[in-house]
Length: 77
Image (cartoon, rainbow, N blue to C red; front, side):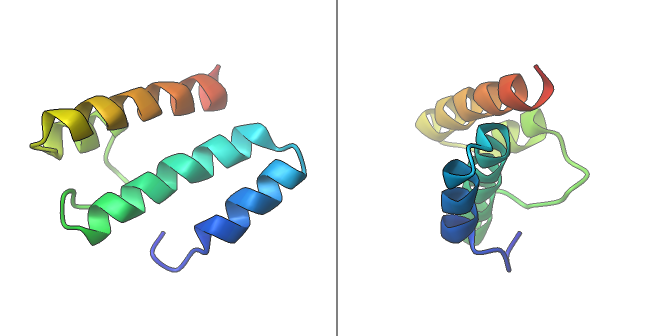
């Protein structure tokens, strides 16, 4: 995720009306930002819940948990 140009990828997905994919990209972008700030340890094998539990800030936990809910709903139904 660290080499991906999320701004461009998200914009392209939205323009193509691939909103499910755009939602996934937004979630991955959030993980990248949190990883870059050393708030989580990114590992593709972790669950969304694992990432939420790594956060110490209640506000960040709430925000990532909500974003995870929207991602799960859009991606898995």
